Length: 124
Image (cartoon, rainbow, N blue to C red; front, side, top):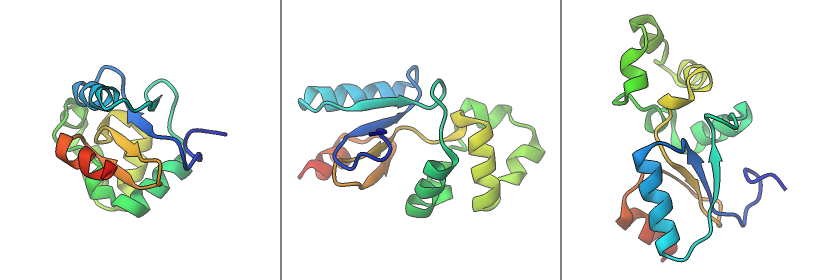
């Protein structure tokens, strides 16, 4: 079964060289949790998966306006991310503007970003 559809799998979506993703993966490992890793820079990101994230989390939470990739975009590209459709198109074209990591927990809940206390709460 594909990791994106396996409800029992703990899956971390992100980019391997992202410091926040590294911290999140290390934290999970230190808790003794096995997590599948989906590097959407190398493995891609299915449009339907991103659409599900946008529906569940909201495009505003997923769009990283603080990163290098965002700052390098042309003003017109940045301006195109003014609604769910525009932001989704931008995130599919430039995976690095997705805030990382996106984690699908075994119960199907999703989180964005990494904070140890938030991750611990997901396990409680």
